[in-house]
Length: 556
Image (tube, rainbow, N blue to C red):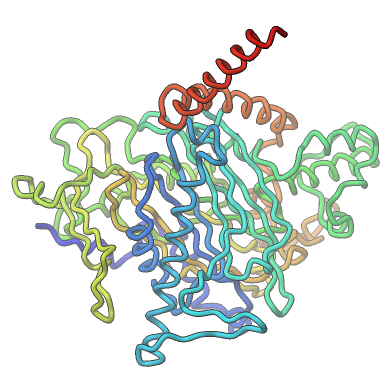
């Protein structure tokens, strides 16, 4: 059986991303001492199935221990195909059971990690921690669910160890499936994080599920363009309305910060007088701040982005990626074919975002097998017993062990569909020897029986750079005659300075209309295709029959 050691000794995603990932090691002492927030982002396509909290939690515990001694401060889950479509469209009660299992997995992983750490410290004795009037034990759930949001199949869950450190949580959503519904779509959250010393930074998260199928590359790029146009954290129509009334200065944002920011370099606006140009610049700036590319915020994008390594399915008998380092078909040889990396570097998708080196196998499409299914199968990397993920440092037996043997599906090219990218600290901060995002780990979790995807996680230290520091400096204003040497390239390519698309003023109105369609479709599907729907339909018929009986015999 082929070896299961899927790690490689060299980065596979390109030198520029390697430099981004390891930049902290070459930073100055002032940068290395900068305050940070420990963040873990995870993306997983659930295949519309309930997860096992124990099994998934065990995988999470392994992830939480990668290159880190403690627990992350903030955990963000991006979930796709989180539940059957009918329940996902209706949401609320029908979705709660699916999301709650992820909460159990997150806290279960954290509790077990804490217990092991405390046992080592205290020689196996349980411990308690007293904070003010609150006494915590190692069994106390470390994480609080701050917010959960879904649009159809796609959901986001935001957890924090200290929820009071997260404030001003904003949400956004959009669908780009059939009739703008959320069978494909995106969810956004934005929050301000503050540490005990009062240092702050703003964090923006996007969870998304882009168009599937090998041949659908243009559609995936179009989906991302739709996110840039329509995933906004306030209603753009209100900004345009205030502008039409000549009252753009009455926006709800921090006016001092807005006035100090430079104008976006979006053209000369020939034919406008100075007053009109200033007013249009303020309008563009306010629309920019509503977008995912708000200049004063960090940005993380996680999801089933669905980018493949070919535009057609594999022919019969095609050699699929192997985990055997000695094989000519080792998965590292397939990564240069990755559509996402090519399209991103060409400026056609995920504009301005970077990715840590990809050193894990393709995350799709897996066929989980029974324990004995490998007996009569080809052994060339087709099956994997990922026992290295289950090795306990203390040798504990674990009832949640579930070692899954698998093979790649033969009708789809294995691909790195599940990815997490981020917007690095802007060049105007780096130019002042400022801190950068430090990547601790970027890896895939083991295969689970309930999905044909592997979950992917990113563990990073995000520097606490305040919104004013992250915002573009006045040296990038249009009236500056001698901008810094790095400003030309940044102005041309950095989406925090120049949005690649225009904001859609009708995005929220379209989303409201699509939400009504989702409810109609969801309830229709639910009533005719599920036991819950059958009970609701039966109860409705009983009530209707009872009402008719009463009306008939009461003589009303």
